[in-house]
Image 1 (cartoon, one colour):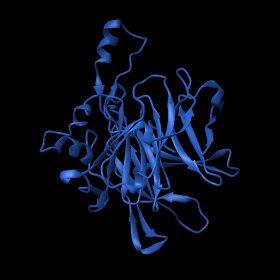
Image 2 (tube, one colour):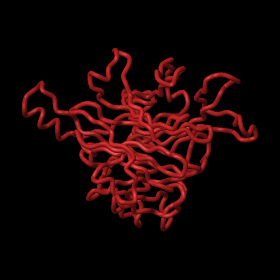
Image 3 (cartoon, one colour):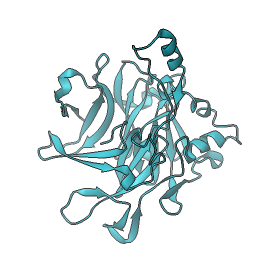
Image 4 (tube, one colour):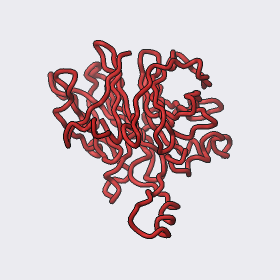
Amino acid sequence: MASDETSSLERLSSGDGVTFNNHSSFPLNDSIDLPAQDTEDDQEIDIEGLDHHDSYLWLVGSHSIKRKKVEKEGTTEKQIKRLAKTEIKGNRFILARIPLVETHEGANQQLVRSTADPNNPSRELKAGQLEGDVKSNSLVNAILQTDDGRGDPHFANFLTIPGKDNGFDIEGLAVGGDRIFMGLRGPVLRGWAGILEVSVNEAGPSRLNLRDNGPDGRQYKKHFLDLKGLGVRDLCVDGNDLLILAGPTMNLDGPVAVFRWRNALDTSDEQLIFSDELEHVITVPNGVGVDHAEGMTLLTDPERLLIVYDSPGAERKISDKAVKADVFAL
């Protein structure tokens, strides 16, 4: 699991398939080079997507900017000025992969910078990430420089808008083969949500480069889906399908649902998927000011969907250190 307010990953394991505990924490700066490392902002990475594929744990940051929150304390004049302030902090501009392997037989899997592939000892697994800093990375640069330097006509103008104002905001990551799908909470364009698809190559020690996988030499593909006005909150591969957790783009209560994009991994071109081409899998409960669905993962034997929530309501809080999640049959 990952928090959007720390620079570590957390592991919970289950002995009965119902309760997940036995907590272990893994500081990411042990495995990759965080852009804000050794600064006052190095404790935040804003991880918004995780996936495990081919002995690697993949992770992505939001790539978004944020607007200051209005507080009750202070004068009206001060708070109005505060509402005008935006900032870029921490390690938000990151797409990385880290080897996740058993360090010895029977042990729990660990994150490491490099190791021999346990399934193919002649192959070396190495941690890597896109080139970037605290304000940008090669994905953002590709969006700004495409279309002969004019910038992407769908997304470039939204890079300077805070995520919760329908600005550019990555939420959700799914990896299938050499294809990396990143969901966009925003922008939602006249009701259409976006998913970016990239592929990468190794580019020296600890670095990944974007391939030219899109039309006209573009370094990304764009897929647009009619999620009935909702943005993407998480993604999950299920066979050749993509499961999409969809919810409100802006900071409000609203409908949440899981959709299935059938045979998404069988496509090679950019896609425009209408609502009647998507399967509505489940409606996810949401509260008023609480219980905002934030992440999902598949459980097996039998196949089920585990969904976790941001801002859990009182009925979900079992104790100061435990909350309830929901499991749905598929």
